Image (cartoon, rainbow over all chains, first blue to last red; front, side):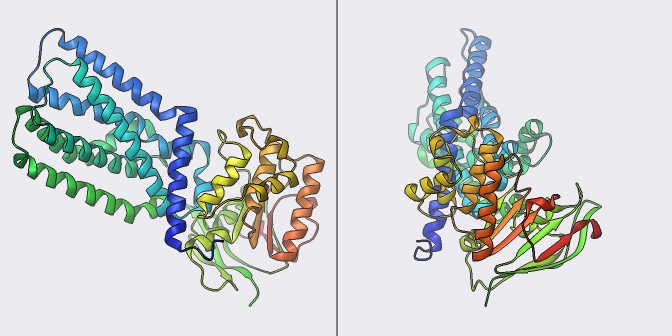
Length: 231
Length: 207
């Protein structure tokens, strides 16, 4: 059976197996989802109460949107690796499947979770926060898509690193902040442009930075993961 | 060329603590290698290095007689049963077996796995989540997972842990069968765990 199939086909099957395992596990345990949803709901509630009836400028609201997304991601996107270490199943994965397939599966899972998180945050933010208006929808949608991918890619490799550490909870946001800073600054700028009604071409520079960031993070992660994962 | 597993001047240290050093061992097809040593001597560390989940600090592990292997086939050479190897508690026994097959890049066969679960007397519990299993049942499931891909090298760390008399009898049969079709490596403190061995590494003499 296995000898006839190419290594590439087996690799894809293994990566999908990691993704589907994490997804089914998440649906049964609600381990990361509960943390993410609770964080988003409570944070938006706090923003709502602190603003009261007063509106804030589009620049401030754009920044606050990504603050919510960043900290919610910090509370949930590390779980995929931390759970493996806490339960002792990391070695089971190491024994059975190549490290590249593990990383690809975990990245896919965090992309799905990150996309869900961003979508939930944006919907709740748009519904409840007064003054949050998007005038150039195309810029906003591309920013949200690229921002989610960048956030998930960086979070995945950082989660793999901190899963081996003793102080996982504290280390994750501390280590993530400097790595995610270029991404956060760019998505905040792009979101502000969308709120201001800037033409799409004006945000091209931001999108180039975001795409470069994603390519660099995924390439470096793929090269480093084997060293992080094995010992 | 027949299958052979050997170590050359193998050593492992964590930070500055040397667990063992200069371990030379050799075991061939149809033979059993026993790894003995007191608690903390490094039996489990050596087992992890043998099956490739831990890197040695010095020396190397060599597997001969397999021809050229890709990454999946290399991992598929080994089957491991060990107390520190965990299964996914939220999944059933059958789901764990199917997952293991997919992780190895293969299509699992439910009917084959049903036979394997019957063999370790877990068939009645095949659909139950593993978190409801006793430690002995989990150990039986680990045997099913280790055997599902027909490994040529079966490594057992504390093979009788948590097993009752029936479970131990199953394991002795598994050990005999493995000796007839490949290599068996057993890490244990109890000589009664193992019927016979051709090769032995005593880690008490290697630290």
